[in-house]
Each structure stands twice: as C-alpha cells, then as structure tokens.
Length: 138
Image (tube, rainbow, N blue to C red; front, side):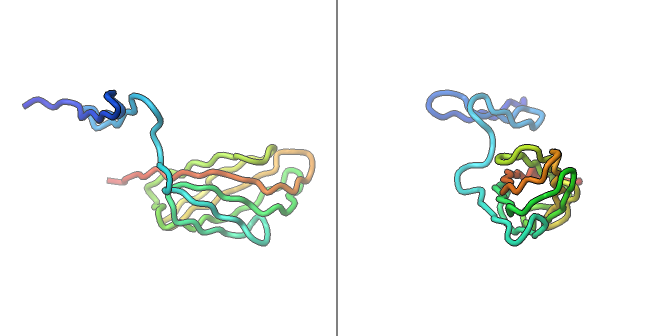
C-alpha cells in the first residue's frame, strides 16, 4: 500500500501530523514540553557555580553576584538528559545586557558562557530558560 501521513486529532481538529518523510508538524497550537517536564535550579555562591537539573527543559536562576563590564563567566549545567548528539537552546528571561551561549555539550551536561555586554557592573540574578533537543549521530 501507499504511505500516508499519520494525523492526530483532538476536539474535532487535526493538531499534529507525521508526514511520509518523517517530519513532525504541529498544525495548530504549540509544539514543546508539557507541564511537569521541566524544573528550576538556583545557582548558589557565585555566577560560576555549577548547577544540576536532570530535566529536558527548565529555568536556571543565577546568583546575583556582580559581573564587571565586558567580563564573562563559565558555568556547567549537570544534566543526565543531555548527550553529545543533542542541541541545547538557551534564552534570557530576566536580565538585560547579557549574552548567554552554550559553549560545550557532553554526555551528562553542557557549559554556558555568560557575558556582560554593558558598560557597568550589574548584580542581577540573571534568569535563563533552556531546552534540550534530542539528536542522533547515526
């Protein structure tokens, strides 16, 4: 027989489709993690203290230690859901004048670099959201 898309319906309308090439398409609504999938980690001591959160998505509330103008720090997210084939996305939620980047990914975690892009030394409890997108190498 012929291959046809797999369609998922709720409330009488198509909400999600897997097409014949394997693409997953949200036809309405949002595509992402549901309630209970994420968590929150609070960074203790300073801005370069590692945090642990073994969830595929979540929020990191960084320590409110000062970060000098133009300076940067590195810290690790220890997370058993992350592997080297994955992509980790990060978004700043609270705190302006910062750039947050994922700079390394390994089995069990990733490293972030946080840079103060302002001309002053803020003492913000920078808050970031992260999401793990699973990948495969074969």
